Image 1 (cartoon, one colour):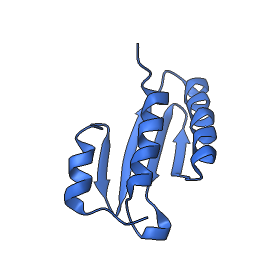
Image 2 (cartoon, rainbow, N blue to C red):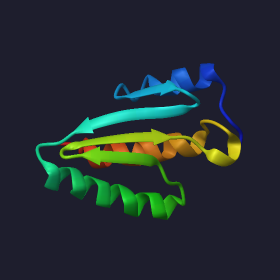
Image 3 (cartoon, helix red, strand yellow):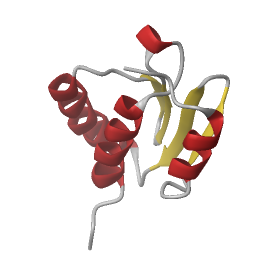
Length: 96
């Protein structure tokens, strides 16, 4: 998969205001009500990551989940990362 240009990345990020692009990766931080809700979201995201065979760098402290995404094989951000962002967004920001 080909690495996206900075211009393409910035255009695609317009759909995802919670995400930023720096250091050749996409970054977001999500705050939940409590640790249980954060861990539950992480578990659901983990299943999606396995299904897509694409895994983020992430960490959590209590109720905050920090995610960094890039496609290591491409040396930067690709369509694969945006596909995973779409899934993550549907998990952490469910439609009401």
